[in-house]
Image (cartoon, rainbow, N blue to C red; front, top):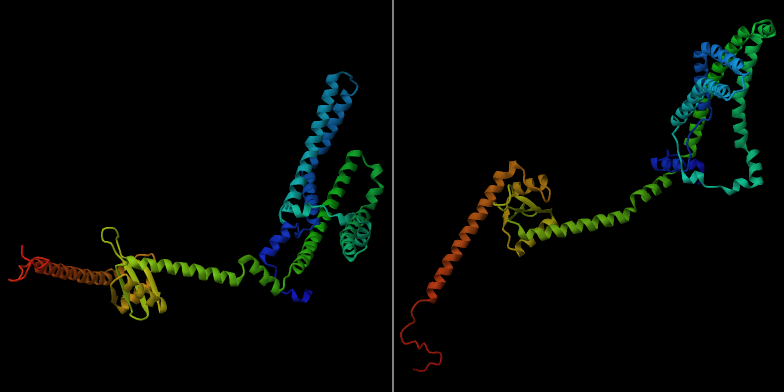
Length: 381
């Protein structure tokens, strides 16, 4: 795909994959610059203790060097190790800590199996030669020569400024010459560190721009990635439709145990269940609109569930209560009136059924008319 089609910024998923492959924006000069500045500052701060410590160690070694016993040799080794550890380990530890911080600020440590896999094509001499003389290697060499050239210019400038003093160092005493040399080295160290720090910032900005350019994506790649992450839209629609049908079938089965169905009458239908001994408030078993409302009413007629028309109550229940939820307190009064009407109608129907049953029972036990033969065969006994 042509680069001019890659106009979109990289997605978080693409950046995560690049990180898994070990592709990060890092400047090699930044840890070096920070380390040089930190060590220069430490040596400058501890400059006053170097000469006395080393001179004392050298004097002690010369005083005990003529002894040949094991105790003297062990003490010489101990003093030497302690002196080296005292003045070498702090700069080394500081350099290591600053280098680690420089790496952390540029993405942290990344250990990925993809980056550790051997690439056998790198062992091919032809590929290595072509890589050495490529434009990428040339640009890397030029980027390395720029700070080196600046550092050389800085060193020549310092030596040119102090050339007269350099020529007279033989006339100085050893402490004065060492002190002057330490000052020159410190000046070169902190100025060189600042040069490297500035160049590291420039190099990081260039690498960041190149990285963002290489990570750009086309609109088709973004759509493909979205489809891979979220799934095929057609498949997702089928799954959603299947779950929706399953919920509707389950909802329809619950209509059988409803206490009442409140309708609009043609647009909304809400099935309620209320068991006074078990429920604090009526429960919405099913609700629907349009064709689904008609299905709910057909199920209610099949299972002989009362259907009550109440337009405002049906609309309020449909819009405010989800299936499986209890009705809000503001609808208690309206629903209670409907339930009371249902209970009165059911009680009246039961009373009429009982009265009819009594009448039928009394009719079946009344005396037979005269002359009727009680015998099944119609003959006398």
